[in-house]
Amino acid sequence: MSIFVIAEAGVNHNGSITLAKQLIDVASDAGADAVKFQTFKADNLVSKTAQKADYQKQTTDTSESQYEMLKKLELNTTAHHELIAYCNTKDILFLSTAFDHESITLLNNLGVNIFKIPSGEITNLPYLRHIGSLGKKIILSSGMANLGEIEAALEVLTKAGTPKELITVLHATTEYPCPIEEVNLRAMNTIATAFGVKSGYSDHTNGIEIPIAAAAMGASVIEKHFTLDREMEGPDHKASLEPYELKMMIQAIRNIENALGDGIKKATKSELKNMLIARKSIVASRTITKGELLSSENITIKRPGNGINPMRFDEMIGTTALKDYDEDELI
Image (tube, rainbow, N blue to C red; front, side):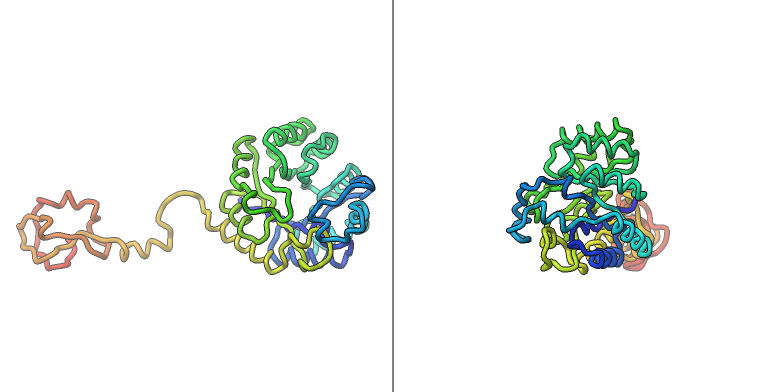
């Protein structure tokens, strides 16, 4: 099954529809399956006094509150309609993460069929119940969570009405950028085994090698932040890929996807023509006359491979030559 690649635009549009459309262009050109934004009302998401995260303080105006920062990054209903229509023209799926009940309802009314739950909401019971009641596909990020918290979230979602078969759990580490030694990529497969769900990976590391490794390890969904330019002002640009990097990452993921194959070990079509050249056969190591007994003194193993298989060497020892052989002639 094809790996579903989400290009995470998030709030890297900086509140501009023009920039948001440029991000859609980049994601489409890179070959992503979906481009994902964030849907929220700052008034519903954060209190007026809430502090910014450390990474946000380093990348934005320190004099503004988290509320003020987020207020500038809201996308209204009209913007959602416009971006969904634009995604349709670019043949890429529009997704968005809802951060509050009003936003969940908006996305549902807009016909969004995959709901992405961010790591921060995995312990939000009413929120989980709301999304679970829609019965749509769910991608659940599990940054900061342990197995017990994932289990509890899955229970809420399934009891609310979403079958487990529709849920994919993404392993993630909620730090921007994520230190390599804290990635713990094997946890992705631990999640799949523990809960019998599809699993994937949401990446916050610098660079592209970790999501590529996740593809090789069997991720069904891979998500990665991207931006038009890492030097732009805003909370998430610094930990995002630039357009050429996103394209490289997705191309590598598609290559890995093709390389994984069906797991059946056999000679491939392209190998068959090399088999006669690379393998060996039983040949005469010197002149042999008809009636002579074959032994390790007069037969050996050499290329090409279109004679008797060398695995039958022991069978040949002590048999009688039925004809004369020249040196190097196939027995």
